[in-house]
Amino acid sequence: MTYTVAALIGVCVVVSLDLFALRTRLVTRRVWWVSYAITLGFQLVINGILTGRRIVVYAPAAILGAAQPRLLGGWRIAYAPVEDLLFGFAMVLLTVSVWVWLGRRGFQRTPRAGERRPPR
Image 1 (cartoon, rainbow, N blue to C red):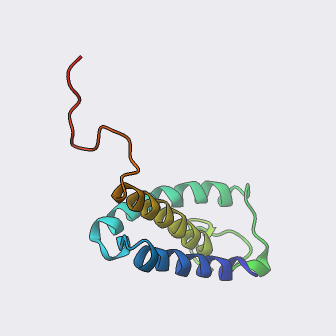
Image 2 (spheres, one colour):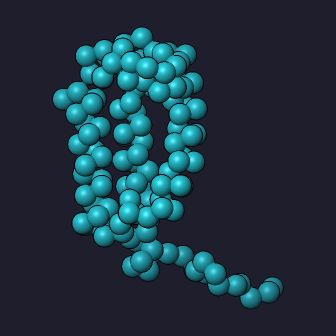
């Protein structure tokens, strides 16, 4: 299985979990996309450093586009293959979806958000 296929399967599975299994429906909310845009910016910086300096190298047959890192083009953004963005999206969405799902079921520590602690 190539990195591309694994990334696409990962996104499909996690979006399905968000919408149908966990029913958090984060991908339907504007706040999710704004928050993810902030995360994406930092992801591009870190991926750019790791792949641009060739600390992380990908097998050319496993990814879309050019084997040689470029800043932009050849299915690369900030030196990283586009598949990295797909995996990053899936990882962040899964983490936040599970967090929201658990929070809705009371798996959170006290005090809850919004509650004030009594003064000491």
